[in-house]
Length: 304
View 1 (cartoon, rainbow, N blue to C red):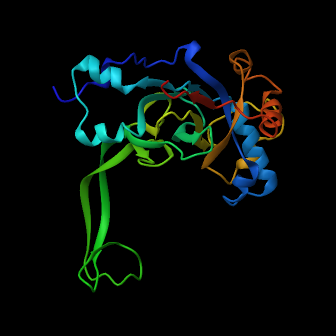
View 2 (view 1 turned 90 degrees about the vertical axis):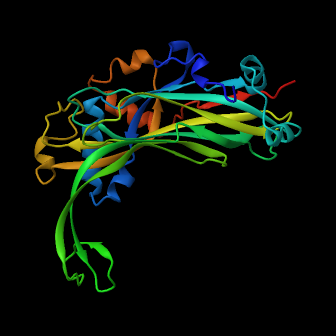
């Protein structure tokens, strides 16, 4: 046997309450909305409409670290010569990371993109640990695509564009693999996963988890910081009750839909999140967004 399956580790698809690092409500940043072409007034109204909809809470799991050497020994697997050499100066831990995007069917602003970002840093200020490897790496889904292509003067196929000088045009249908999950930051101190919606999976809601194989200098403690961001597709044709009284459906008559980045995580207790549909919640969320930051860091102690 040359490998051991990480599925033998105690992995739960649902994050138990005791393993939740923080609960938060994701909110837009109005100045960032202005960069999408909205006026300051309209950006504020879009922000309040999303918050009044109440559908952008997330749970973030507490990172759980497993020492690799006992796992190797239990599985009867010996590290390769290269890893054995590295073990003289470095430690390896398998760190489980998880989050949950908590929306539901029919939401007027589904999560169409999400990110679970892991930042590794040294407690003593030395060399930062790195993500030696991550899993899952990429998950794709199939989609039927129809595209018009032309043959350029340099005999290259190009997507058809007016005035591009194509001499031959044809509609081509083919099956395209679209990533629904993509890992980033391998061999770096900032790593994680991005999740994307597809026509067959229009929302990235639900529980998400992955493993980071962390390599750190031997004897050095380090921090694992976990951050979550998302993007929602705001459908202005779907009714949302204006609990904040800061906007009206007439404000959005020129808009059909808009992809809105949610870049701020406002810490909330589960009790507070139960009242996210109540009048006044939007004001509370925005007030906290300017002052509070979720406690997103766990310290992993070195082997002693």
